[in-house]
Length: 624
Image (cartoon, rainbow, N blue to C red; front, side, top):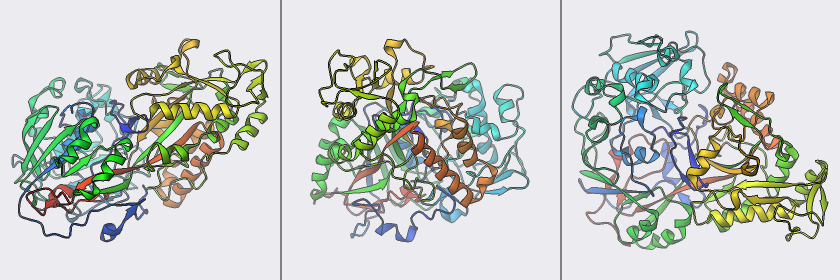
């Protein structure tokens, strides 16, 4: 389960969708996470993390893995060019991680841990030495080499390849930004101590970073690409060539033998896999639409069904007596409210907090936050699978998560904050619709003759979208704030994406004040690429010297001391509480139904050889 989880934008706090917004899903090197020996007994909420099948596994067998998706998968096998979160799921049986990790996403050295390579850091020299393990091969039998470690950097940094994975974090490698800017055809900071066909790649960094030991840190890549197979394909043809779409080379326990584009993949054992011999004979991966997912489980079509959403849970839960068990894991996920306080200056690549709006006032933002009844929404509409977020760092990162209370429902505090901000209740005040407040006999808030009226760009896409939006609006009315929907309706995801990724400068009658966002986060918890002054994903455009200092402190060389970094993260989370520049809304439990014939399935983040270990105890799926 250790494939590096990328940071992607989610839809309506329910589904994750890759926008190609190239960032990367976070924990500390001293977080112990889950001990592998105890994972069978670990629980998250009411769910087990691992399924314990009491029956003995049979030899061979075919396992069918389903993934719920509204859209077909793209099927791009070359990680530097992949922009679709679904691809990483449907291609996972063929995946072998470059580096093994533990349950806290800390990189683990040693071939016995399950990765293809080890990595060693020299703090004084500011280097990392990657050494491939003996015997690691591609599915065609060719050895994986240092050149295969180097090649993904060329693809990502070469503008002809049109990769969306380039980030400023990679520019910390010497010479990589020069290559990216076409100043050189070689990357000076990447060298081969024992030659291109050897096992070692040496990385020269400009600065040491505290996240180096965490998978998904973004400062170096954790991918390989078969240079011997792709070297004759021009960079601008890589994304469409059959060698990266329908006839790929892989390094994992299974290799694709039949691909139905966008629909299904059949896998057979990769005889050249360097890890433990797979227990299954074959694996079939299929996508299924949300509307057909429950019926497919009832018909026993899948052994494992991934990509589940909270609205499906009540029906799927009924199947636990009909051959399935539901497992759960804390998701690397947080949903938020953003407040539009400025715009993004594309020429200077910087956010500017210059908008004239009531949500510039932190007391107004805090009041809006304390007015929400998130606990009730999570219990009734999210089926108890979401929990109220107390910060932007999920609880799986025990050392870095907030120690505060977040924003529980507190209407008295919300009203007091608005009073302090100078917004006074007026029972005769009228909202944008020309009517007085029908939710409170005390009226709307008024200041300098203007009603506190705001525009909420709420997203569509889920059965719960409308009731959640209305709950928010009704709660805000309770404290005298007039909130109306953007263009008087929910906004579809594509339109929403276009708007929040625009500069932020819109016609006044089209401007938004509040919107929703949800992120599948990185296994390195730094949030520079979400909220820094230069981050395009900083959709509210909030900036301050203190926020910049807090984010920089988390990623400073001082923070290579674990205790220092813990304190830096807490200070950052405290700042969110004090300013509410975003409102953390919910964390989420990821849940997965598994047929009771499956052996060795776990949601433990530290399982590096899941597909090789999976087995079945019967030729037929259980219905009991």
